[in-house]
Every structure is written in structure tokens, then in C-alpha cells.
Image (cartoon, rainbow, N blue to C red; front, side, top):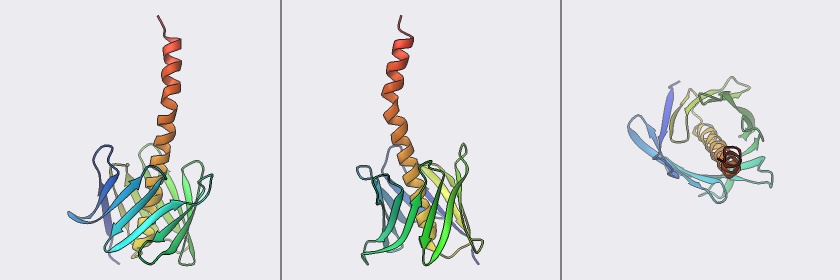
Length: 169
């Protein structure tokens, strides 16, 4: 089985990520920062990631053209794991190294997909011919990263006020 290496790149603060195999662009992912959804156009397929609950612990992947749900996801509130339900199988997305961002997807058949990178760029390596699983993993990573940044940025005013009070001359 051939090893697939997919990479992504985006400019600083951009909501569009270009997807590549080698040096050839084969798609793009666009983020919607209002509802935290993302859309991927990949080899003629358009997929949309959207959360489904108030607590944002459930999500689904929708095939936009066929107007059907192709995968459901159970998200962790700690941004470190997720369960993917796809084609009657369950896969587990998990963080391998939080400080040097690396993730992987495992399944009961020993499916392994390895991710490394950041919000702006990175790569995915897979021995599995299942593009949908690979793209779902990328969408989960993207969602967790954006939500984590929102939490960090929302706390910045608190830290600024705290430091200005503590270090006031």
C-alpha cells in the first residue's frame, strides 16, 4: 500500500489553508470563525465540519454535494482526543505530543494516520487509502486549534488588567 503524505499551508491569520500532495495543490480548507465550521474542497469532494451541540462536544462531517452526513465525531472538552464514527467503524484521534503538536488516528484494525504541525502548516502521513478519515482528522485538529486560540485570546484582557494592577507604579 502506498504511503500518502498530505501537507497544508496558510498565511498568518488566514482562514484559508491550501492542501498539497508533494508540490501539487489538490484542495483547500476554509474556516468560518463565526460558527467554528470548516469546509474542505479536495479532489472534487466538498466536506463541511460542524459542531452539533451547545457544549460543542459533538460534530459531524457533511458531504455538501450529496447533502448527507458521512461521519460523526465525539469531541473531548480537553482538546486532546476525539472518537470518529465512519463507515460502521470507530477510530480514535488523540494528541501524541502537546508541546510539539503531533496527533494520530488509531482504529481496531491498527489504522495509523500521523499528523504533525500547527494551524499554519503541517503534514499528514497515512498508509490508509481512506481520504475521508485523513481529512476528518485534519478537520478535528483545525477545530481544536481554533477553539484553543479563542480561549487564550479571550483571557488576554484579564491578564492585561491583572498585570497593570500588579505592576502599577
